Image 1 (spheres, rainbow, N blue to C red):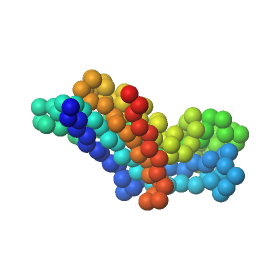
Image 2: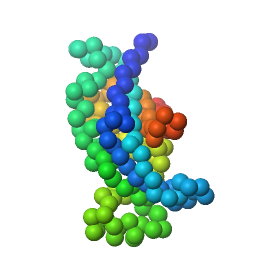
Image 3: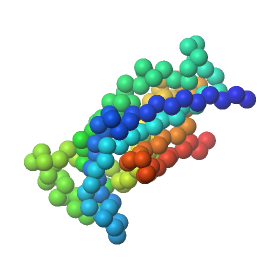
Length: 150
């Protein structure tokens, strides 16, 4: 069986600048810090569409909008961060634009993006194609990948 894959990258140049902290860390990662994150989506299909594409990249505007809503000049805070009330106060006075998440870090951001993109792709294409993986890069040396399991 032939399988096809294509990828769409929303690079560091897109300005998806997010700040967060790993509050459980014993290192400097416990402090708020930020990156211009990069997201790479790999799509798979057993059969190409009428244009011989896995997905039509022009139809992914909702995906980019979701990335901007959650990662563009945002401060991501884990719902169980012991300092969440401090972040909420900063959000209330418009010092930060806070997004509350299950947990912070590239692994969790990749999981969030995988879940959203998978729902979107299924809504658009049904069972014909899927999201194979999502890679989130902080910079050239650090990244995390969330892969499809079935």
